[in-house]
Length: 87
Image 1 (cartoon, rainbow, N blue to C red):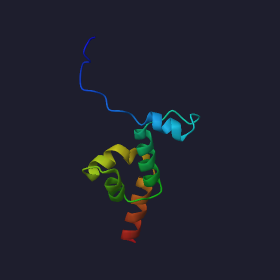
Image 2: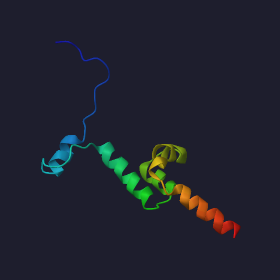
Image 3: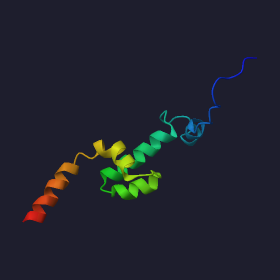
């Protein structure tokens, strides 16, 4: 019997998710749920620092580098903030 190459693969959550959806749900993994969670929080205006803490990211930069492209209104909010500050 040949030996497996590389480190052993950890078990995935896919079987658990399939069971949770009764086998009829979408083909998703835990990372997909995590990414959706962060994206929804940010799109609803949750402060990125809180999202960083909830996700367990070491730095706010990691969170913003990963998810800032999901914040199309960020530019609009910045413009409004500057207009308010200068008026």
